[in-house]
Image 1 (spheres, rainbow, N blue to C red):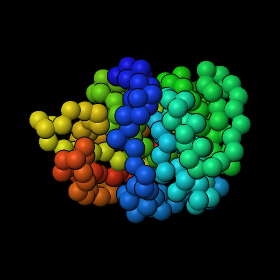
Image 2: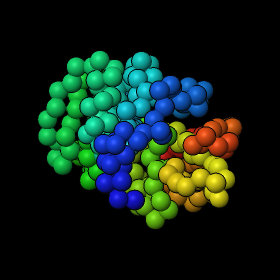
Image 3: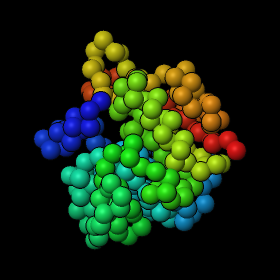
Image 4: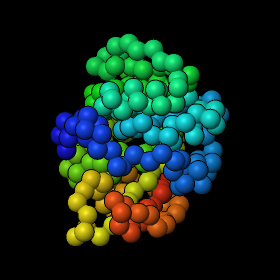
Length: 211
């Protein structure tokens, strides 16, 4: 999907995908990853997600990536966080109060630019991408994640004849196909969820990068 699609959504404030509350599956399942306080957590395609605040409040350093500068600036403004900006490779880097948000295309990110991460959380990245891009995204994530780093992944499902993506339906079989070459994949929970006003479901997976 063209990056301009998402930039245009933010510019037009068409952000029905944004949630003003902490995601319940994050709150219910994060501790199962046993990530040490003070560790760095990568959140790809983060938007202005409140989940960043939930993770930061638990003592984690936040490393996040977001395509839209509007979304990135809005996160700091709406949470009343003083921020400093500079240029970091091809990204505009926003830093303040334990948060580092890189504004730019995640496919331009390298492990050198990112630095070490101890865990990752994907609620909105994989499901935002069409099938051909999803495969490239997962391969790219593999280059960014440290060995033994755990991750939490959330996917959605809904009647595909009723709703037009994004978000995209990502099946359990596809999750395992994409991640099992380099991660141990465990389905933690599946529960009902509303997707664009239609009854659907969400699934949460634990991913553990293998040595």
